[in-house]
Image (cartoon, rainbow, N blue to C red; front, top):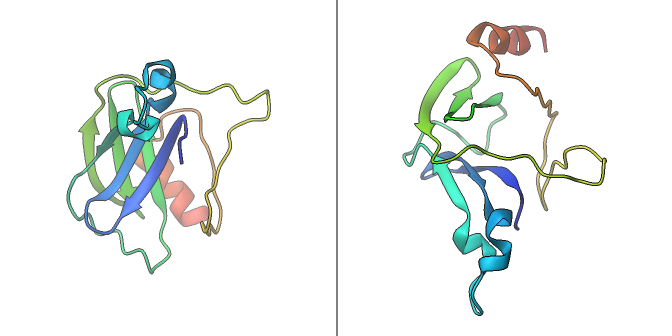
Length: 125
């Protein structure tokens, strides 16, 4: 599904952030889909993200890079080719979820988390 931005987990390539599909909406040629134009930034390697087990996934995004954490372990960082823009959702906030997605909880922090901040969330909830 097309989204302004999304976080994807893949057992073979690890976590990734996909974004910018909406920026190309008017440029899509007949026969192509917008998802062909989305930008995907991830680790591009298996990154210890067992899909059958519960864990804290933290994704820290700055204008220049994305960093992935599993519990308290840093999985890695990747540079962003352009800054991720936010989407207007009729003043309804940020939409979260997908078909078949099961989350224990989700929190959105509109600022960069430090490793200490991630540890406080992991330990204290």
